[in-house]
Length: 161
Image (cartoon, rainbow, N blue to C red; front, side, top):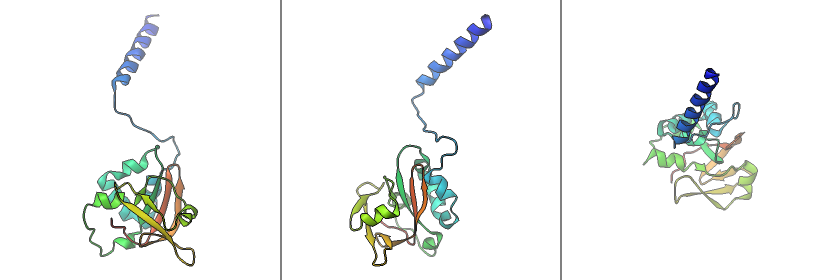
């Protein structure tokens, strides 16, 4: 009986201490692939993944909450390019806070969408052969990944705000 009482007290104490913790963390269910998982596992966009991790934006894209569209420049887009300005701002400019597939991007041609960089928008376009553009960058591999919290599209250029 004493053992049961001790376990009950320990459990109650544990729960009360947990309730005092104001920091919350959203954990993805096991097996749920996120935008950041897809980016990390794509060898064509390794440099972009590296920069996301370096700036901490990977944590945002790993979140189970939210929906994102990420326009990820292929590694070749970084060749010989000196990134201007604040890299964090440049990376945020590649992310829209809603999930948009290639088909949806085509229907949004000529329209703007806000990015995670406050006050900055990207504009979608469609070429005569149906190719999708975001600003001046071609979507070279649309719907590269459609995952639990968004969509990743590979693009051929770095977007500059």
